[in-house]
Length: 96
Image 1 (spheres, helix red, strand yellow):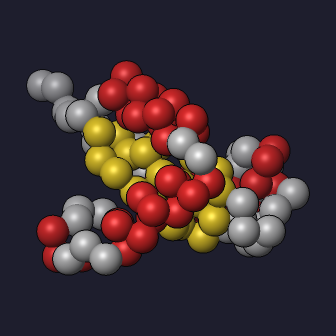
Image 2 (tube, helix red, strand yellow):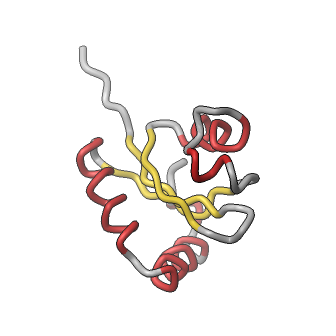
């Protein structure tokens, strides 16, 4: 029996208003790690607290990493546009 793990691409807003992109299978756990432990990225450890600004589901790890790369290459203005579109969506259609 094979279990299907959901992968997520996410953007965190750091305390200095910068944005950090990452991938995970558990957003709540990863957000907690970024805010409280050494398991969070070195970048975010120096910019705590961080909050979840954006999340996007991916079919698999490869797709998640590809999308993360695309998002990282966006300008800050375009990342903010992506976040604004996400925040204006009907949240009932977004799966956690």
